[in-house]
Image 1: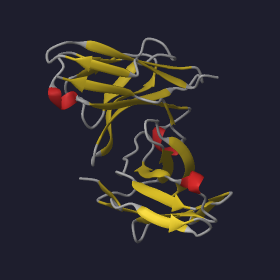
Image 2: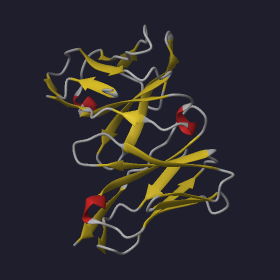
Image 3: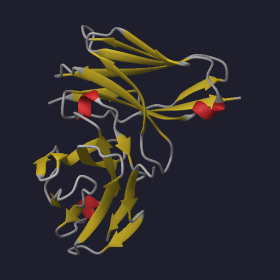
Image 4: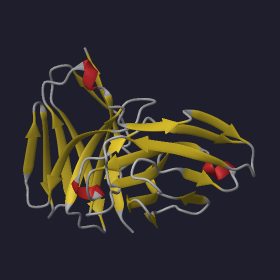
Length: 110
Length: 114
């Protein structure tokens, strides 16, 4: 069955540093991969979508890579801020469905 | 634009009771989905709809029913609540196919079954 792995331990970094979150998947060949941010008590909020034929995508301080050979996506936040503290979910998917990882909690300290 | 609205925000039920979780979107999205989120499990797809009158099962459909009579609304019905259905339920919508379009989520319904 499809398996999505994200670091279950929280990632603690200092303000101004680059945060890198990892998403690995197995038994799966997704055509798309999405990243979401989730704050406590709120629904996930869409951040970025990358297609299987795209190696990298950027949006402001965010960068996502998609390596279909390694079956891995990396999510980077540059110049991190305390306001970036949240849980980040990766979601590989096909045309009609997404499969969500359990998320990695990011804590950015001043 | 309200986006995706879920009601109620919180609910406590007794085992065996039935209830309907409401979901409405005002973005004219074709695709709508219901997920449940449990600690350590991630979001799991319960049911989804690709348009009015069309629904299909997701990963964990047992114990839940859905219908889609309008584009805007996609209610989720618990037929006979069980403690295993204690969870946070999220409704989401998107313009096109779920994987290739951003999902817009509501803020969830927190459901406890005693």
